[in-house]
Amino acid sequence: MEKKKVLIVDDQYGIRVLLQEVLSKEGYTIFQAPSGQVALEIIANEKPDLVLLDMKIPGMDGLEILRRIRKIEPDTKVIMMTAYGELDLIKEATALGAITHFTKPFDIDELRMAVHAQMVS
Image 1 (cartoon, helix red, strand yellow):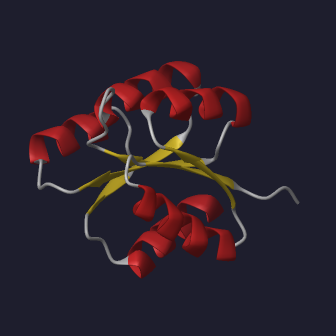
Image 2 (image 1 turned 120 degrees about the vertical axis):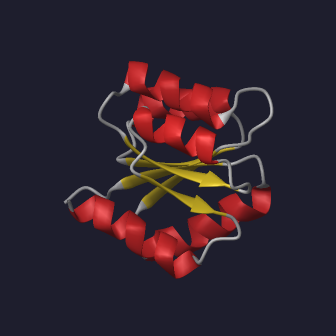
């Protein structure tokens, strides 16, 4: 069976590494993107099953990346990550089809379980 693919989009290197470490132990193939441009290239080429997408990324913010993901791969599952309690942005992300969101600093086990729940559904 092919391994499920997760794309981590965050400009913070430490968060990408932490999530890669935790999720690769779960058996997923992990891709990392520090920017929206890189994320969109990975989505077009690799078609990940799930994207963990930070809301605040320099250059192209999470909502813009999410809009573009919907154009490339409309069915890709997306979980938003935000460092701020930006409810208006979260509502907009949900309207664009984001499944849920986590506020940083998040509980890594909760995030891991949320990813797992999406991968088996």
